[in-house]
Amino acid sequence: MMNTKRYKSTSPRATEKFAARLASKLDAGTVLGLEGDLGAGKTCFVRGLARGLGVPAEVPVTSPTFTMMNEYTGDLSVY
Image 1: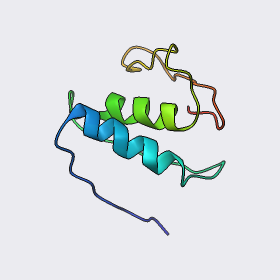
Image 2: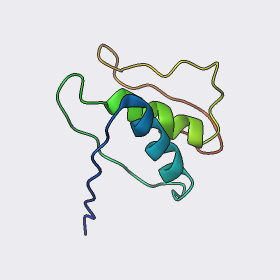
Image 3: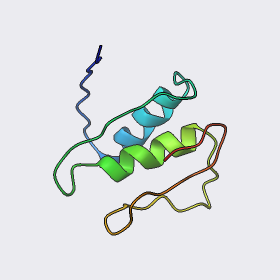
Image 4: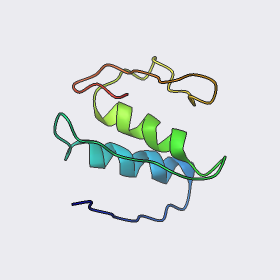
């Protein structure tokens, strides 16, 4: 069964903070699907999620626009 939640952010920083808080509630194997238009904040969300999962701040989190997949290693890996 799919569980859908919605959150409306007011800024890129708020998106990152929300995702970092959400990261603490995730277990290994959790799958999150992100969808949205260009500029919707998907990369900001993943950046916050990665930081919340222990990916160091010096590791750049970038949009996978022209790649198949990015991988970030922290307490849990983010793909």
